[in-house]
Length: 202
Image (cartoon, rainbow, N blue to C red):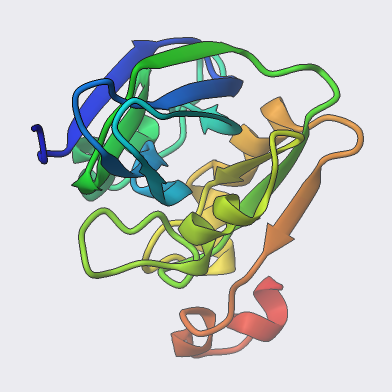
């Protein structure tokens, strides 16, 4: 049977999507981990016996740098090579024996709450093993009523997050009832001189 990871990508507008996945196979037993975009964890080591199927749902957030016809988020060169800011929603099927029978994607219901994450390397969707952050693991702990939109990036301080237009992009997506979690500090404290640094930026 197949033991290799595989990906599926869907060209969709920015926003939250309700993803319903039916894991399993008539041909083999499976152990499947599902991530979205750049390794955001949703399902971990879900085992299925041969001929057994498990249906699971979660909310995945997709975005592009577009803010308006005149503005876009200034993403780093590193971010141009990963899935987090492109025009597709990408799903990764990994694990010891990944198996998937079907995928259904639809726009998330309007009442879904979004948690927007602002931060640096401790929050960012780390692109490569073995690196990881709490920001890309936290989706695993929520059901299909909550979406996680991780806008963090390594090396940023509070003011470079703002100047890159990341908060401005969040404000184009934010609605009543959503949350914005902000974690900065250790890059800000490297800044020296009057009127700069974590105390002032925050």
